[in-house]
Amino acid sequence: MLTMFNLLLANLLFSSTTQAQAQEAACKPLRWNISASALNLDLSPWTVDTLLSTPLATLLGNVSELNFNAGVNVHSEIYGVYCEPLQKVDLATKSTLQILVHGSSYTSDYWRGSDSGDSVSAHSLDYDWVHYANSRGYPTIAIDRLGNGQSSHPDPKVVQYTLEVEILHQLSKNIRAAFPHVKNLVCVGNAYGSILGSVLAEKYPADFEAIVLTGYSKSYNTEAFGNNLIASYVSPGANLDEGYTQFLNISIFQQLLYAPFYTNNAPYSPAVLNDDFIHRGTISVGEIATAYFGIREAAAYKGHILVATGQDDIVFCGNGPLG
Ligand SMILES: *[C@@H]1O[C@H](CO)[C@@H](O)[C@H](O)[C@H]1NC(C)=O
Ligand SMILES: *[C@@H]1O[C@H](CO)[C@@H](O)[C@H](O)[C@H]1NC(C)=O
Ligand SMILES: *[C@@H]1O[C@H](CO)[C@@H](O)[C@H](O)[C@H]1NC(C)=O
Image (cartoon, rainbow, N blue to C red; front, top):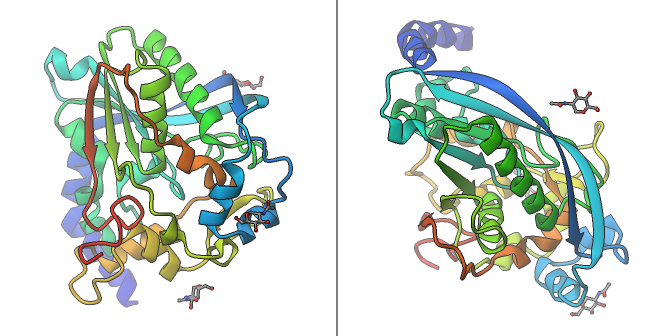
């Protein structure tokens, strides 16, 4: 009952915000059929169970002796959401299109912040990248990466950064053709999505005029993942193949994706953490085994680069403020 009352109250208090938000942008779903070829890491000697029961640092040592020589050709459907600001904007912002590439265990929804419909909605705009970009005149396309959300889910061993980069390369060409007025295509990544951005900058330096890498650095803390991946990840079951994994419980989720060492004055709302966990996505074993090798130097890249990493990011910034 209390929840119902809160919900009504929240609707009363925040309906104006919702309307303002609705007026600020028009969003529509997009789908692309993309065929891409890549040379993947040859994981054929490994079973999913062996991949997941090996400590990550050991696994990376093991697979660094394998070669990226397994040719794959995958036909996939990639899903995305295009949001266009409705207010009058100047040409510079209108001709700049941000492609938003989420991290591991998320989908395109990552960029919308929390949207549980409960008390969290009071905070949701604070976490909403799409709303912020649109309100400043920038259109966005948030995609579901291969193996996530509404995009295709092929064999999870095949979902590796190498193949995902080829898909983003094709996608950038499709988007330029479909949005001919766009002069500046910006790749905005988060975490694993930023790793893909770094490989794109190296391999296809002309694809994006600017690359924004959030939740990213050159140091990748494999220790943060602990000694036994299988203890942290479980198969989400349902209709997904074994090898698509999901965080086992909220402590592990918080440990890796939120600063866990704030017991009282956490700089985020616990409701947001909860909601984020409930809506968590998946991670493929192919991504777990290869992500580390996707942190690259892009000597030939001549566009703009912005890197933004939180000081409490345990994976890309050590162990937080004390470590
Ligand atoms: C993608 O291909 C499938 C199968 O050929 C087709 O049903 C679907 O309509 C295509 N989607 C798009 C967006 O072209
Ligand atoms: C992985 O490497 C460790 C030591 O670095 C070794 O003991 C283990 O046998 C290797 N596993 C496989 C499956 O190659
Ligand atoms: C989460 O899982 C880990 C690993 O199995 C376990 O140590 C921890 O107690 C669990 N936490 C909760 C809240 O269930």
